[in-house]
Amino acid sequence: MLATVLFVSFFVLLIINVPISISLGLSSMIAILFCTQDPVGVLIQNSYANGFTLMAIPFFILAGNIMARGGVSQRLVNLANCGFGRYLGGLAHVATAACTFFGAISGSAPATTAAIGGVMVGPMTEKGYSRAFAGACVAASGMIGLLIPPSIIMILYGVLTGASVAKLFIGGVIPGLLTSAVFMLCNYMLAKKFNCPRGDRPRPGETWKCSKEAFWALLMPLIILGGIYGGIFTPTESAVVAVVYGIFVGFCIHRSLTLKSLYDVFQTTAKSSAIILFLVATAHCFSFVLASGEIPQALAIAMRSLSQNPTVVLFLICIALLIVGTFLDNAVAVVLMTPIFFPVVQSLGIDPVFFGVLTVFTLAIGQITPPVGLCLFVACNLAELKLEQIVTYCLPYILATLVLMCLFIFFPQIILVLPEMMD
Image (cartoon, rainbow, N blue to C red; front, side):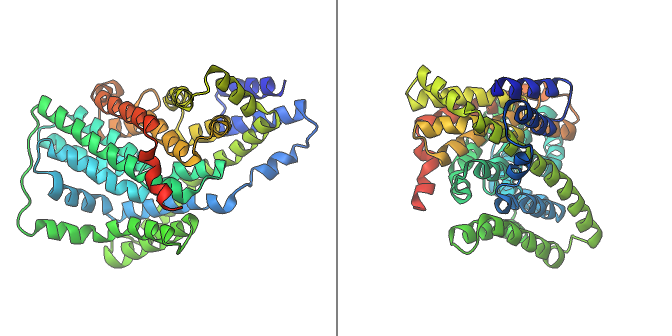
């Protein structure tokens, strides 16, 4: 009865166009009122869980916004151009490499696409790349921002499951770098097919100059990760360190930040953080009601009745996540699906860090698939094209990510090798 009331009320609210975060909270309240003896106040108590860990989210968003406003994007693009610009499809490789660098600062896929795409789409089209190819390249490469640490979505997963955020971060390094390399292979194949030009070799001294200009941007992820894995500070404390570092670099090193621009950054960050944190609060309420009705346990029993093989179950879950990821934002999908599927993988003895990274990777594919691929929409805006014009060029990248997803399922050590070294 509780499950029926919870899910029926949730989907009815969605159908009448109630925002998903409010739908989660209202459906939880309805289920508590009509199907249990618990007071509604128990939902308020559950909405405040894991507050300290959640503080990392607004601080990492703020750090990424500060660095983006400080002109970091162009400096990273210039450095990537020195390394990859000379090859066939060089500017596409530059875009992918720059997104990989920037992903280690922003922790967000749409932000990575916007920051690097704003710098790269224009020069790519001027050099003879089609606008659709340029848009697809920065859209696909932007999803790497969810895998390279620090990742906001991994923090959400860690909060919901209790998995180590530090291990999730380090677990995303190899998948992120592997995705970047595979995307460069896609860039090369597309560039060869469409006869895209090679870039020029860097002039003597240019690589050293670009490295010096990008040094402070590249130092930020090293400070964050080095501090976490060196035991100097927690992931939440590292987010605060990142903000202080970003302000220092913006005002004292690059001198591109002003008090007015910093105020604008605070406003933007507050809006983004409020949306995510309210979603997390109502998701905790929804998860509490799910647990009260033993719904995840029933799902675990049902899935195990289909197969006792962990690989088969992971494939079934990933198919579900791929479908969900095409319709929901990654943050929404994580907070909605993790409480449902996590007990299933726990019952099969699947490592929670492995499942977390795999979940984030699988949902990240939804960033470049219609109808709700946020990176696609950002790229369409930058390239001034319609969605269907870019989607065709995204197909090789989507196929590549599906192959990688299967590779991670069959060879989980690709994800777990670095986290296991921390034990």
